[in-house]
Image (cartoon, rainbow, N blue to C red; front, side, top):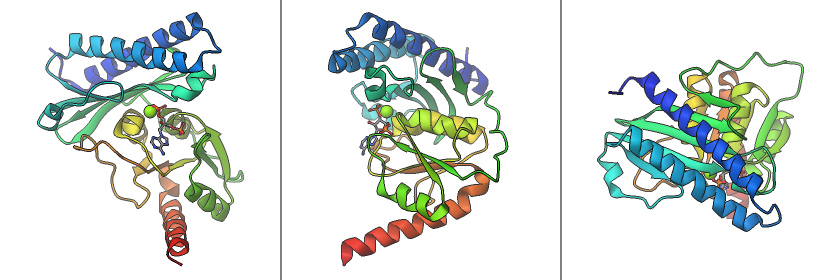
Length: 260
Ligand SMILES: Nc1ncnc2c1ncn2[C@@H]1O[C@H](COP(=O)(O)O)[C@@H](OP(=O)(O)O)[C@H]1O
Ligand SMILES: [Mg+2]
């Protein structure tokens, strides 16, 4: 029998790691010029592996995955795995390292566990064992991760006000985990995303003691009927007050401009 939180975190880590290994094998065997085909093969291969392992190990649980048909059964389920088999699909197909496998567990109204494999099987962060980020060098400028392909205007405005450096990266999981490891101090995203893009890395970030919320400071809520979860901020906890205030002003300024 399972049912201890750490057993679920260990399973999430094991599944994320083996899926990431399969993804590297798929990429090694694929024509690197065929990026469309590689994206599809990666998504499908990781999805099939994760679905099989979760069915084997937790047959009674529901699953919400970017790559599987959604079912309303998850809305009345007690336990729901929220999975992104390949986050940063674009970067994966370009031969880059900033992609991730996300495996999270939502139970009775909240995220309880999560694991993220980063760019392959060798680096896997999970909510049961992740340490807090190291202290930051207060003399260095703040570093803010943003999407490399769709950086939101709100992040640029907020970074300018804070004197922060923007650090473009692919994959929501890679960016959230970069806050966890202390490589950057914050990740600011707006304009669109889904629950699977953030559930697992947010579970890891929360376990590491980081701030996680919507851009307006309200909580990130998972396993909703509509999995669209378009914006978020993840940052070191001591930055949250100032960063949310700056983001609030940036959003209000953008709104005023639209209205005028
Ligand atoms: N405006 C938007 N609408 C929908 N999804 C978005 C989005 N911006 C980013 N995402 C999703 O968030 C993940 C990270 O994106 P980015 O690297 O640009 O930060 C990607 O997931 P997938 O790679 O799983 O599709 C991407 O599709
Ligand atoms: Mg994704």
